[in-house]
Image (cartoon, rainbow, N blue to C red; front, side):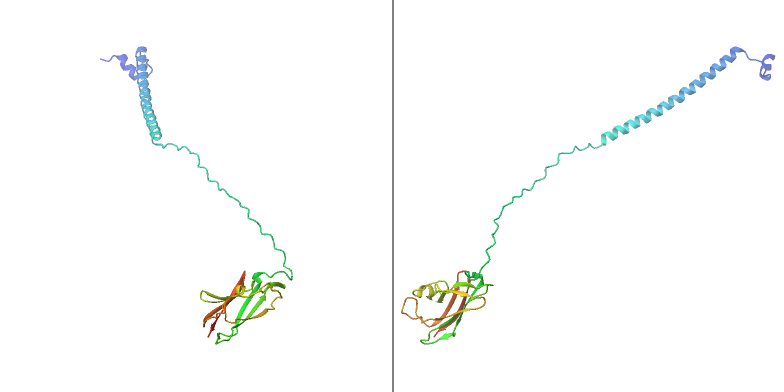
Length: 223
């Protein structure tokens, strides 16, 4: 049974406990508090360790999956264009032409006109010849039979030509003023060159020209 002293200890707060019992009580409280702190520390360590492992694993996984950084290679040298400069000769300006100089071929126009289209019987074909200077200044031109060539042909048959058929032919230099034609007449006796044989009836072509000058042609018939 409880003694009167025990009842008085619970009912009266002024009554002091036994020192030994008080010390044992506080020791138990300290043990419980230390155990709780230890448990909390263990739980915190476990959580931080797991997070550290996950972070390390993530870092390792990221390092494993990261593609290697390509190493820049040296750029290929660009081709260099080689330019070869070739000096071309420069044409010297021609001296200005003076009156009386030889006519430039580009300035001379020749012409031939038959007196008819058909020459019958013993009728001699007659042709009018013309040479015109179209240049800006008067010039000289050789209208001799060797320079101003006149040919009469029928197909591939060369019947007559001034350079082979005119005896004693030489140069005939004429001064040609601009736009003023030089006129001459050719009377053909129907004979072949260097022969007494007469050309047969048929179609013929007369051509007049000179080196560098456009040739003029006309057709006529012998009856």
